[in-house]
Image 1 (tube, one colour):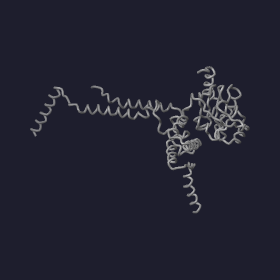
Image 2 (cartoon, chains in turn blue, brown; image 1 turned 90 degrees about the horizontal axis):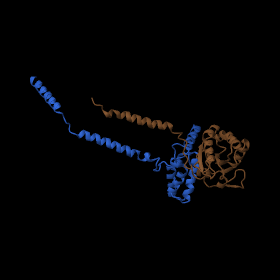
Image 3 (cartoon, chains in turn brown, purple; image 1 turned 30 degrees about the horizontal axis):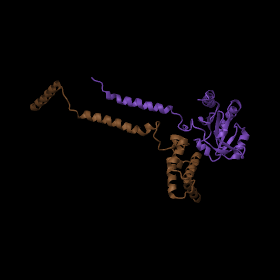
Image 4 (spheres, each protein chain N blue to C red; image 1 turned 30 degrees about the vertical axis):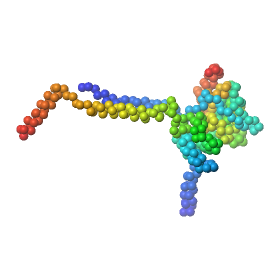
Length: 154
Length: 182
């Protein structure tokens, strides 16, 4: 039982080891920026993990670089530019607007506009008054009279 | 009876969807990132030579001829896979190979090369991975083709086998040597 509980403790503790390379920061503000940056940057080795959540070697190196640049007094934009120049669109979870990412950013808006246009066309069609030809009107009258006659017979 | 055009909508949607799916199949392995450094100069660096802790290597040492820069490490299994081909290139092809020893332990790296033969003109010690980051490297092996001005013209991620040399790298090298001003 003791062994088991030791094992459980180890299990719980080891899961929280994942990516703690605790870097010292002079103040909480800088630390918060660090946390935000490594959450926004994607690990280039992994398909869908940010730097904060990855144990890959390159993620560790890039976290170290982010930390170094923050201590050097670099602005967030400068750090993101640094990464973008080296790793391209992939590294930013929020890709920049450009020729290759145009559809990604504006595709939904364009689709929405198309949908609105189609909806508008359909709505307009529904409101148009129904125009009947003279033959149809005559036939309608006949049918109505017919049914009235049958009602009377009953 | 008139033909109801709206019946065509599902067909059109289906065809467009097929188009996107077909495109998806054609995309390369999503693990392969396009390099942001193609046609940009090889980054500046000042790092020690692997075999000579007195010598500092810099970008100037790579410039002057078309060359290959190969990022490797003793921790990298695919570097063993590509090693025989790198040896063949260093013997048979007229192109120097420079090594970037990435995130490694220098003594281990020297022993690794002694055990297997050294295909490199020299290797650069990049034990903190700073040059690798400047190169946009995210693993090893990666191989860059530099023109004589030290501009990165091509990058290959993964082991350079003979087939890769034939189909991917050698055409770039041949093109560059035939069109030095391209």
